[in-house]
Image 1 (cartoon, rainbow, N blue to C red):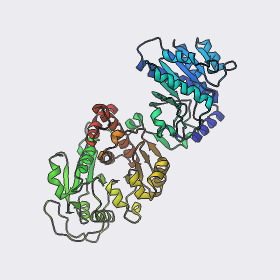
Image 2 (tube, one colour):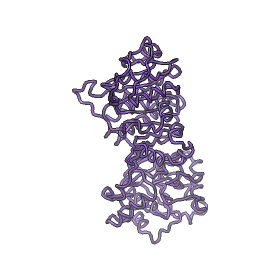
Image 3 (tube, helix red, strand yellow):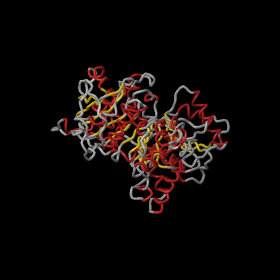
Image 4 (tube, rainbow, N blue to C red):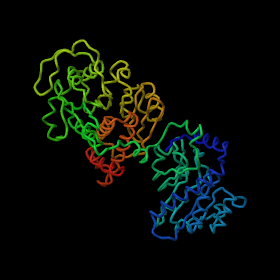
Length: 544
């Protein structure tokens, strides 16, 4: 699904009109496809065949789309009523068509005490909100605001609630900024036209959107303005297209080896969560590379893993561990660095030595870890596998001069806003104000894929492509869920997916797993990172 600004959508419509797909044709297509979605949504909510639909029809194109949809529903045998707000019926051919299909037209201007409005809402099964569209900007005009306010009051007082479908967007939403008028009617579903508008995936607008669906308004794929849009919204169709194949003659080597460098004495669980997530998403082999002191505590909880134990200083990875790691990368197809590492200087030096491929100072052997083959002779740096950097790994990376030039490109970076602030020097507030633009800007500058985590996670590629995950849920606002995400992305990268695809598929699966875990537990507050991990299997089952 394309993600567009309002100006981008206007350019697309203008080019379409100039190339023969006229505004009238787009309206007809939009209204017809809207009616089809309403039929699907309504029959999922109602067992009765005699369904009443009430459409709130505004003066603009959204009102026209709504009238076309009402006409098609009337032709299907629905009792269709249009309640016109600041729109005249006398000279409106779309209103005439609805009446010819046995639909009914009512004018808000003639319903001064709103008795008709109240009666219609009390009996409606479905309500179409087509008052205001993408051109709306705050503040809301008084006359339209009054009607919408009355609708909200009536809906709050009646026992039987109709199923509310917003046409393109809920009336009163700014489709660029996501700001919302207080009179805005929250929808159960929003059927947006051609592409998702950016403001719909911002708070507070998202709280009024409900289920988000997209319908066609005509063939747009050949338009230059359509092709120029490089932002999209992840959905199930995209996820299915990216999911790695699982051939019947496969063996563990078919699906790659994920190496997870994680953990310290204070953060033992991070390594387990990340490693199990890499396995759960389909990696053939997962090796946990942790400070040797953690092995006894962890091994019994993860029998499927192999282990590469690293020298440590007081439970944190030592600088000399780079030699051990480099000597054991032969079969690794993706490497994750970061979950639970801590921020000790010795671990920062480990990362610097690893990326530089330089020998570390000699250290005395310690029991429990693979011994390096002594000081590394003068040689070219070892070829490094694809990287995923997360959590403390990002904070340590940021301390290295021009760190982004040290990473084999493209690496995948998975910062939350606080970590993005450390990497960029920007305030969290500035990052959060325009997450899409910030992620895209720095992905291009650094040459790496950026996964800017949080509500509506943004994945940005260096070539300008961006994908947004249309999920905002407190179910994922728990420690450890980021470790699960990093493990999922690494497991997909290990299986051979390109960096950008691994990041967006991993992020989509992660978000869906968070939602699924909340449903199982009955509360977003009760969801732990382990619950998200367990729900991954259910998400994958729905895709296959």
